[in-house]
Length: 265
Figure (cartoon, rainbow, N blue to C red):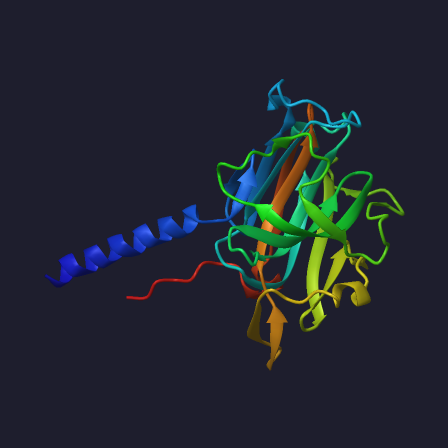
């Protein structure tokens, strides 16, 4: 009887874990493989249907995709190495942007989400806050819209939210582009963004954000209230382009939680 009960509990726990895995927020056309610590994203703009046409300015169409690393929206700080697989990507046709989204939380209506996005390309970067972004498998990422949604630049540079690199992006021994993105809270509830150890956010701008969600976290023996949210991969390509991007995160770089809650017997 005890053995049967234990097996049944194991089945329930397994089912719950599968449910957690299926509830990650995301939207758009793309694929991922791997886990929250080592995830590879593919966004293929060569498959955009012909009936999706460029916008009035002749730009696009675009394919966009984003997906949470895990089902837990309690991450305060994280460092992720983002590697663009050049051999399997196509980037010569214009827009090809890989990104890391953080502070991802449900909007006030509960039906959409808000998040901050660090966008990266071979030409430059941006840091933007997005509002009321649709989520769910039925949301198409194929569009002629010039942006993912309503956004505000968050790097202190006003409307000039896209910034050209001061020097060429780093590459590894295989010619892949490599960006290390660090999301920190040197002052709790105020985010700081680093790309390759260079601060690219302005604290006065980031301090204007009112955290949608906070959590008491003990760091280095001191407990404080931190802004927390989900972490997600992001890709945007124009028709004809393709992105294959790996996201590698060290567990020790995370403040807060990146995993789903465990079930205890």
